[in-house]
Each structure stands twice: as structure tokens, then as C-alpha cells.
Length: 414
Image (tube, rainbow, N blue to C red; front, side, top):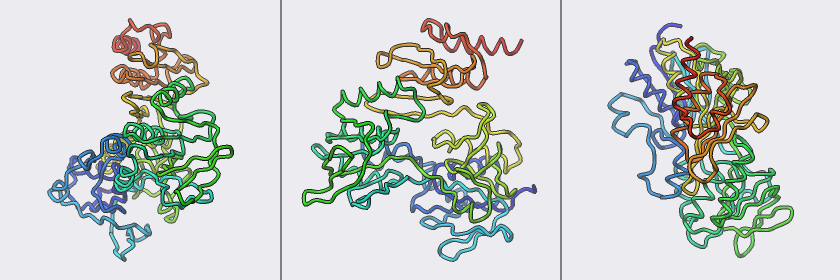
């Protein structure tokens, strides 16, 4: 493909912003146009349910780049605008205000949107999701001492929100239809520890609780499950997200639970790439297709796409990495931990740094660290190495993971 003359990036979140940043840092001097349906410049979303929700204040917003940078680097912005259609034949993006944007290279960083409740009363004004700055700012007013907060969904967003609400003095109940919290991405042992920690902090958690309806009463909203009712001043819904693939589908691009891309972020149209939460891509390290909703993927896949546009032909191949902060504890996850794997324990959860390693046929495929950020970094490198470490060494706190990694690399080199 010839070098691009003009680039359009659709999506004003972290992936779109980082892609543009990498294009300029990589030496592209041609026209770049950003289209974003929010009024804000690109920002990172994790603080919305972490620092910003826990502490409040606009100073907690993590902007991809400060406002002057976008002018200094001559980035044309169409903020508060929506891309309606892609004309692949004429290489045009059509916006909701009638504008037509020509491109030689197009990047889709359309992200994902929160999944909404589909039960009676779901439209109640007390019901909120967390996806934008405005969502968090609105919610902050409801997280006050004595306010009754019901969180529907006990994934990362749900539990982070519950922890922030409880820390601000609210009365908090979490409803989860699955048998346990954090049903995706962590082992049952780690999930049970977090459930116990939330209970210790005064959060009520109901698992196996199907929310059936939300009732409007003179006293406010009431959340109904099959067996209980919970009055609520605020109802926060965290039941997953849906990738924004409609624009790609309408344009005839291949999709399947995300926009399908290769290891370079290329879609089924050679002039169009995609990155971030909206993509489903092959992971050469884990040997499977993944769609990741993570800070790491939004940033690094976006950078990989920018480099590919600039002619650097290199596979995007990274170990997935996630993190969550709750009640002063830091949870980090590398790879894809699986309860069906052989689990090796190092340390006691909640009593200093603790890790859990996940082996499949001897291969380290995942690791979970609780308050163990430094060690988790080395475990992530072992996963990337596709190594088969000695389980006894993994379990022994006296064996430094940095030394184990060094030894495994030396073995690989011989």
C-alpha cells in the first residue's frame, strides 16, 4: 500500500488519541483528522471508575495529550460529531452534519458502549452507567454519606464503583446474577477474597441475584430481584459492554464480536485499520482470537496500527494485562487465567504480596497478583516467553521472579 496522504481517525477515546500521537511521533506530517462523538479531547477511561470516582475533581481526568498539543501538531478535530457512513469506493467518511472527510488511510477506534438493562423500569432516572466524564461527574453527586446505592453487576466496573461509593460513605448493595463476583478473568479463590473484603468494608453482595424490575415509588426507586427488594438513590449498571461495530458492518467490513483485524490491525479493506475495544484480533502468544477491553490494548494496539501505517511491518503480539484498585488493594492480571488450569500459589491473599500462577501442560498462561505489581511484571514476561517454569520455584517466595525469568531466558538461548 502506498504511503498515506491523509489520515482520518474515527473515535475520540484513548485508542484514537494514542494512534494520532504515534503517527506524529513517527514522522507523519500530512493531514490528520479526528472524529469523536464526545465534546472532549481524547482521554483515558480507567480513572472514571477509579481515581475520579473515588476522589472527584476534574484534575483526575487522564487526558491523552493536553489541549495545546492538538493545535501545535495541526490535528483537525470534529468533536461532538458522529461518523454516519464510510464510502469505501470514494474513500470518504460522511458525518452527521453532512461533512465529507476524504482519506487515504482510515482508522476505526470506535470503542465499546455499556450494555443496558432490558427490564421494566430500566429507564428510571436513577439508573446510570459509567463510560464518559459526564457519567462520573453526575454519579459523584449520588455517592454521599447515607445515600443508598445499588450496583448491578459484580465485574471490575461494578466492584470498583461499589468500593468508591462505600469509601464516600454511601450504603452499597451489589447484585450479581452469576454464582460469584468477577466471573471473568480471575480464579474463584481470588473472586471469593474480593467478595469477603467488600463484605468486611460494609458492602452487601448478593450473588445468584437476577434483577427483575425497577419500581418507581413516592420514596424513590426500588430494585427488585426474584426474592428481595432494595430502595435506591442511585443504580449503577455494570453488566459489560458491546463493541461499536455498526459503522464497520454498514461499510461491509468483516466483524464477529468486534471488527476483525489481523496482527497489524488491518481490516478486510486494505485502506482501513482498527484498534482498541472495538477489535477482535489474533494473539500470537496465546494462539487465539481476542477482544480486549483494557487500557493496555487501547494504547498499544493503537501504536502498532500507527506504525503499520507508517510502514513498520511488525506483528502486534502482547500478553493481555488488566488491573483494578479496590479498598486500597491492587489487583493485576496477566495472560488469561483459567480455573481449569493447574494453579500454583505464592503468598497469602491479603497478607502482603500474593500471586497465583496458571499452568496448562506446564506452560505459564496466566498470573494474578494481589498487591504484587513488581512481581506480576516479571510473570508477564515469562508468559510472553512461552516458558515452562518449575512449579516449585513459582511457589517459593525465596525464588525471585526476576532471577527465574533470567534463567528461563538463558535456557531459551542455549
